[in-house]
Length: 231
Image (tube, rainbow, N blue to C red):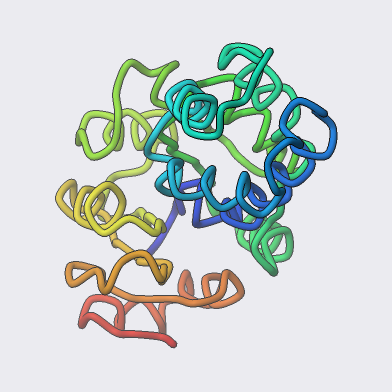
């Protein structure tokens, strides 16, 4: 029986691509010094340099300032603006609240494991309005551990008081989420992401968060052990 469900944040619960595009447009419109270049040029280059969040924004802004010859602005100023304002543009994937509420009603323990900076990521969790659902939230900066290190998964399971074989982990990254959680004995679910062709080690694959709730039922859990794809 599944007793706990744990999640990744970016690309799994938070629609980071949509959120980032909204933020970058807003930043451009609020800061006049950016407007000597075309808005779409600024937005497109930001998205390219960001590399789906795997390049921290101090480097992104430093590169933008150099490439686009942005005068009278420092990367540190733009980074601070990002830290303060990104949370205002957080967009959840569909059915997020309904899914978490349903799992909670079924008595499932809920956890979140996210790589990233502690306060920034937790502010995004709060911005989505989902913090009250979670029994435990682990963010790499605060834990001193990063996915795919098995230690961060074991720590989360210990905090939740649930053995790995009774836990499910859901994420979009084939290595950091799927392969890593399966390696510690959890049921690994891949939330399909266009950035990656596949996650071969997943016990199951989803396209929509609404698909998750049924899987904690015993009838579905048997199918997961056989590598079902509920899409």
